Image (cartoon, rainbow, N blue to C red; front, top):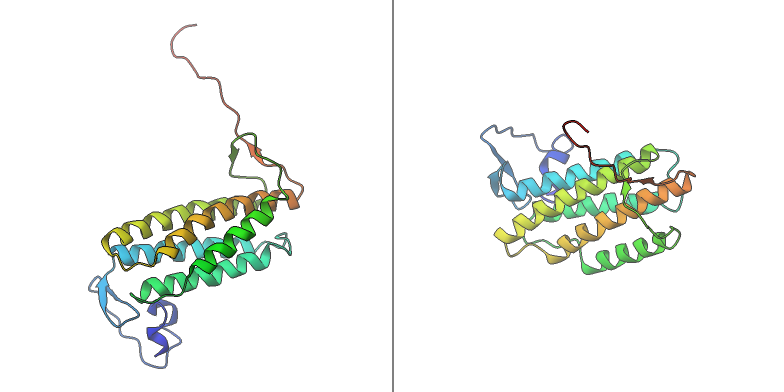
Length: 199
């Protein structure tokens, strides 16, 4: 039964039952059905998995402060749950409660940051730069989920709201990682337009 609860690829080598390999361009979902590997559902699952890997890469850095680390660990578990919900059509694992908690955490972190007066570029510490990578991966996951929800009206609405808030959360986390390390945000500076031809 465990194989039916989460995406099969993550448990293929830990299940008691022998693996059944298929190379016909389809993959199994958690409800026992099969779908094309290039379907919108599988694409959304892949983008969420991609995002989770980026969040994990942030946590590899020792300089991630103690007040941020458990929040990112929670995000990893919630993204796994989100992926499992996508893998089992009709299931519900992410609720509005998760969205509200993320909003509250975002606001709490933002209180320690100075007001932004300029656009900032991804960069600063390596951990902050990876948080920006996670933020952009989150937007990709959100777009993939939106495409799926337009095709399948049963997709849980809080999933979209969660990913929308998460990208904002990762933005303020990137800024907080720089602040905690004593590194300034990398400000965007408008360049003078270059003209062609003779002056």
